[in-house]
Length: 386
Image (cartoon, rainbow, N blue to C red; front, side, top):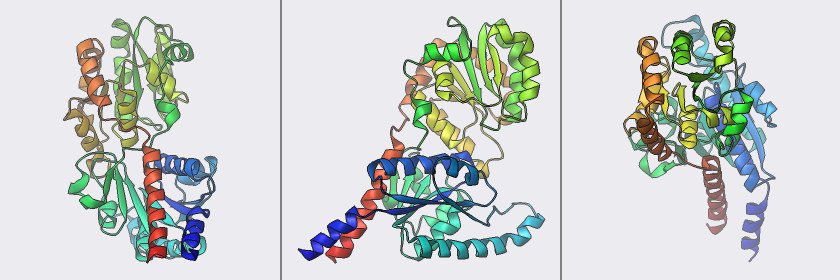
């Protein structure tokens, strides 16, 4: 009786969870989404984020309302650089600080979403017997997660077929956590047309190279403007900051034709709602959003992405006739004709819409949150049962 009471008290006490990941939005925003979902289920949970010093998570996480600590860590360059000489010292420093964070914070679980800081934090947690979970966003697993997979308790993945990288018994297919406000687009088309000052009778292309833009895509779109105007096509073009001034000059003479350039789009739900087709890189978060909004898309993978994972993300859709792929080195010659051809082919657009929608995973963050809480509860119960 007393033992059952202690077990109940342990299950009801506030939980402590470390979220580790960063470097890019594709690692940071899933971590924040998972934390937010856990908070909905267990509002008293205390979180500590662990990122890499000097990376964007050190700004984005506090703005989302969470505490963060930074490790002195960075990636190992594949070509020789002076920064590689200090890499071993950064690893040792990060492992020592990760151990100190664990001893001080005493978490119930450590969750890794990828990025430089995730490796040391998860490694120390595994070696300390703390519950661990990996959330792998891409269809091709990175080397750090492949190594860690042998020791972590659970691996949440976004794509089928990940048993070629991870132990099958540890895998749960959850999809990628995305910003829910971005993918809820029902009944928002009229607001989107008003937001971007577009015509309701013309078709619209949305271009998203990522928040920082994509040079090859931007340069190609710049060369497509006259073709779009002649074909009565509107354009919502997110350029990123570096290309925005160039794009602003390029669209000036088409400003009354519904061809608009933006350095960053705040209301992505409105942009998705208006778009008839989308041109995008193939990062994991972008692919997951496109599946959820069910938009016909042309994917142009970033060729320099680690392990060429963007091409593999794109091919997971292309192999199921759910997207069209253009290689980055062919984008300048093919993008204009392919985008016009697709937007004017209603049957093909409908086919892509149906197929990409089948690959969507809804409420991924909540599915992962429930898995996290189940793992913690099971561990607590096993302590008192045994």
